[in-house]
Length: 331
Image 1: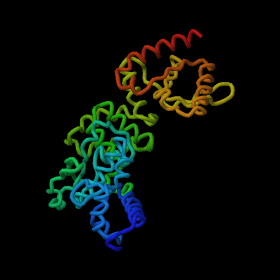
Image 2: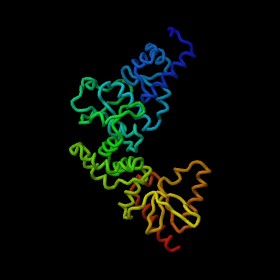
Image 3: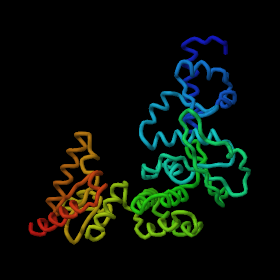
Image 4: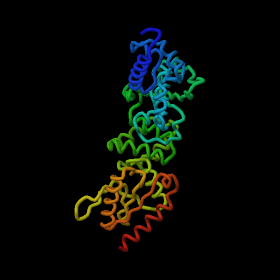
């Protein structure tokens, strides 16, 4: 490629690198350019044009990719990908960083640090580099554990511990309710995982947070679709309500009226977490209203709430459920 490139050539180069980088989490190394048959010196031009951003020595990201990673999970995944590139060697994403790569729910307060794991006994010289720069990569935490090749896989171009291990190690780093929420997220995607988690929990009994994981496991359910459902369920029980049935089918004379988040059967009350937050499209909203009308006509009270309530004690919501139960039975 000539030293002076046209605007069209630069645009084509940028698009090509964006596509190649997307296959490895969004970031790329200067050395990757040569491997892709491109001129590594193009970094100078693209940085001067403010189209590529330096995240670490030799590690870059396209500014559009950086801007598109607006949410905490997306941004963490991008930074984690860059961290892997900055530390070539035997490391994989671990804990909350692995959970994000797998798309598992995770307490966002854990996403300020990238977590990596290195198999015990492997060469650690590359990890002695301090992951810091005047740029954008925060220091990473490198765990050294007895993980084998069978524990590590590729997800979206990133080297990551397996999904079960990602969920359990994230739960260990979480508080009690969020530990259950992460494990519920795994159980929703793979109900059989519940049995595997119990065996996995005994693997590193002295690891920090192992007690949190052990305490969380009895509360894991396969029917919690979102973290707000898990947090709500746990806090409603703590507020004095019996444990609800999850993803319960409600029928009327015309058949299935709907599948509901929670059913407090003895109260004949339906609990719907997220409430209106789920429904932004008018047609979907009207369909949900008709569904709720059928459920109410079948003799059930309906109580809705969202993230704000689920983030608290849920006592006020519990009172609304008890009240709705009384009205439903009276009706």
